[in-house]
Image (tube, rainbow, N blue to C red; front, side, top):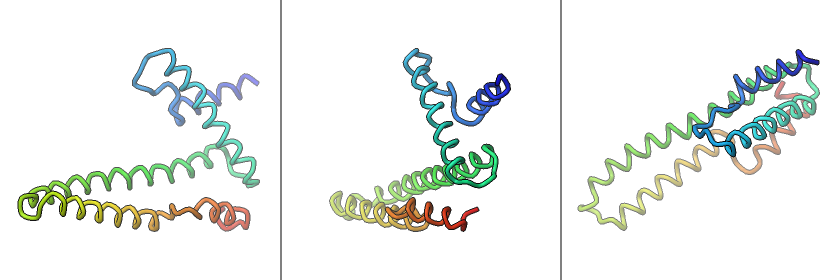
Length: 139
């Protein structure tokens, strides 16, 4: 049983953000311990419910890979938005602040809508992914 405990602590320290918070307060450590345990249990539950024979590590890697892609896309959009808005701000005197805000709003909503579709993050995404997993398409 000790080996299982060792593997659990190695896993949560290396891959699940255990005690990686910037704060050294007791409350943040207490929360970190519980949030990490919840992350681990959710991944383990997904592994059990999936019914396939992959290892915990391969399941974790598949899920974290998806999260990394989403994080990267969000960060990239924030960078592009800062550049685009910086250029648009130079036209403030020419077109007015009200029109400038409308343009920024339209750009932002259009890009976010595109990212939702491109990354398949619409309302039906999780339902469709679960259905595909049950059918064995995503193995």
